[in-house]
Image 1 (tube, rainbow, N blue to C red):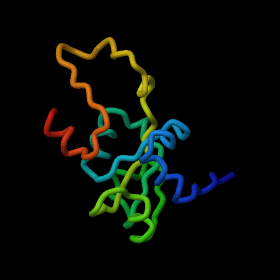
Image 2 (tube, one colour):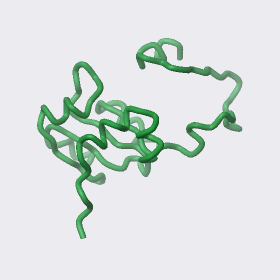
Image 3 (cartoon, rainbow, N blue to C red):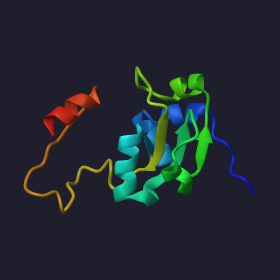
Length: 122
């Protein structure tokens, strides 16, 4: 039995906290970011959405090909990169507790509007 194709709205809703919590997943966009997740946690990648046939690297994951306009609808970026991944939320993502292995330095962020700002702080 083939899995049901999710409506594009479902992917778009993953940009909001409520959507992420309901789905237990979030979206990352761009080849570099996806490969970083795949290198550390390949089992966390649930699905790949792509405008073009993705590189052979992505063959082990379910791939959904979409049109440019469909991808622009799903993506929150001003200039979409043409490939994104749906990734399982790590356990305790929205918990108030710090992880036991947080290390010596911790950066706490709230209501970051631009991911580049977080990157600059890190």
